[in-house]
Amino acid sequence: MKANDKVDAREIRRKLGMNQQQFWSKLGVTQSGGSRYESGRNMPRPVQQLLRLVHVEQIDIQKIRREDYEVVEYLRSSKSDVFKELKKEARAASKSRKSN
Figure 1 (tube, rainbow, N blue to C red):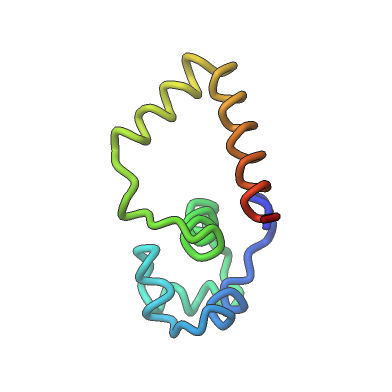
Figure 2 (cartoon, helix red, strand yellow; figure 1 turned 120 degrees about the vertical axis):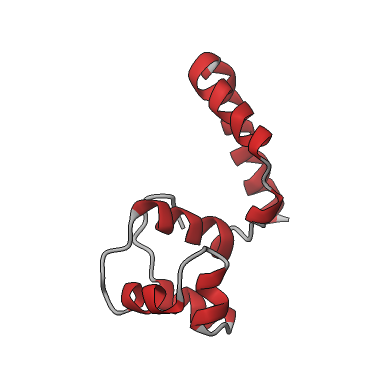
């Protein structure tokens, strides 16, 4: 799944064998809000991205620290060449891990 692919939350949730409460609470979304998204209501892009990170990429967002985010933002704005190179290397490493 690419970052800009349309997200089918219901399908992802069912594949993971989770109920709506379990699935949506990991994103900070209420069960009723998640139900509306699954029924076709437009899902905001930040929620789509969180869904992809948490349920597709399996990233535990509880482990992300504010300082990690600050480093990423600094690299992105002040050292864009370094940021792009690191991003490229991370993608290559991820692809390598998935193929093994």
